[in-house]
Image (cartoon, rainbow, N blue to C red; front, side, top):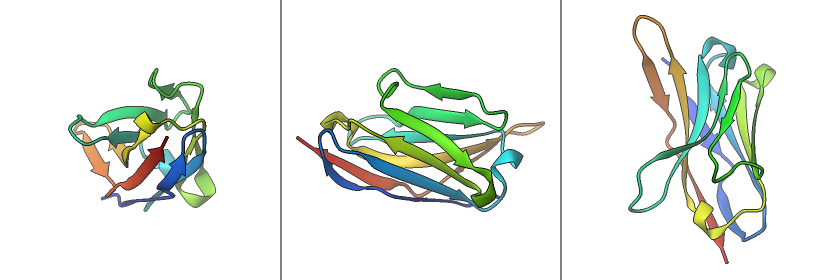
Length: 118
């Protein structure tokens, strides 16, 4: 079992920055990957950034160049640094962890709201 707790959301004006944190209840290296998803009202949940246990990083085109995912292994925490925020970045942001093997396990945090005003 893995517990994920997000923090760092809030309200900012367009062009501003926020840093989200995802604290995991176990070492991030024991997880095959941790990703940040977001879901805006009326939209499907979408993956915006992901970091694998091996350090491979992926970004969606919509955030590439503006968001940075990183991890602090000592704190079992994955971060999402968001800069040059746009109103369309407004969403609930969720942390997700996956464990792959004979059976796949998926874990979700409860989410943190990010609101960007124009």
